Amino acid sequence: MNNPSRFWPALALLLLAGACVPGRTVTDPQSAGQVWQNFCARSALAEQTAAPYRINASLRYDTPQKDGHRVIIYLWGNAGPQKQVQYPIRLDVQAGIGVMAARIREDEQLFMAYIPQEEKAYYNPEGSRAMFNFGLPLPFTLADLSLLLNGRYAELFLRRPTAPPFTMPGNISVGASGNLVFKLDPGQFTGSLELDTQGNLVAWREKPGGWLMELEQAEPGSGFDGYGPRRVKFSHPGGYEAIIVLKEREYAGQPFTPEQLELILPPETSLFPLRPH
Image (cartoon, rainbow, N blue to C red):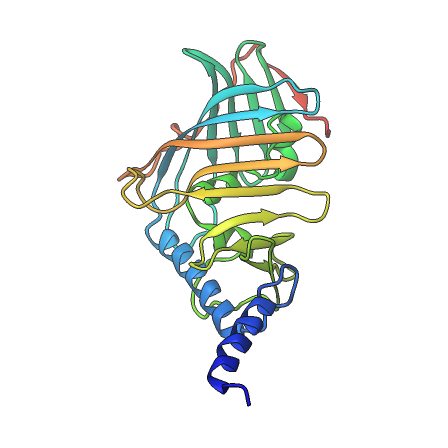
């Protein structure tokens, strides 16, 4: 008769391998629940420590026409605990030393982008695709981008402040890399989130044939205050790609004034509506 002590370890390995087959439904809800709890807890901590922020990053992007660009972006705005978005939000795009390519402002009603070199401004009353329509291949609004780069992931993708109890989505599977994939419930951000075993956000997938976002988290002691990514890559099967690499993220002690968040257009500025791509 075979030795039973050899049988049980082998069976355990087979069961473990079966649970990790890509595309299979997760059979251990307790482990998946812990991963989700870690993800939400980190996001909640980022929300609780939120403050007026200034972010400096490089943005390299490409389009289907292969006309790649590299710019520096400066993003700033006010933020506080347990509040999803504080408008307005400002973004400056610098194309070279002393060359301001665009000044952008977003509030609840309007996206406005001013190009100083052309004395033109483009506006969009609906901000969901305004960045993309302006020529920056990003599938997010400025408000979404600010939550993302400040590490407020759960608040962004769940569309509400993050607080216990952290309700886990019902559809969970195992991705090709062995990470867990949580399909977002209706009423939340479209698509699914991929989390590693520690609950770190690895990727967001919009839908088949849609956008893919991949993240590299900032390492502890890397010089970045708070929580959030070090590098973010967006890609789309249509040939669009954008890579954001954070250079500096800091939090101000005092809120920015309305003047610091304003976008004043010179009198000679010509106004145009943004056309959808």
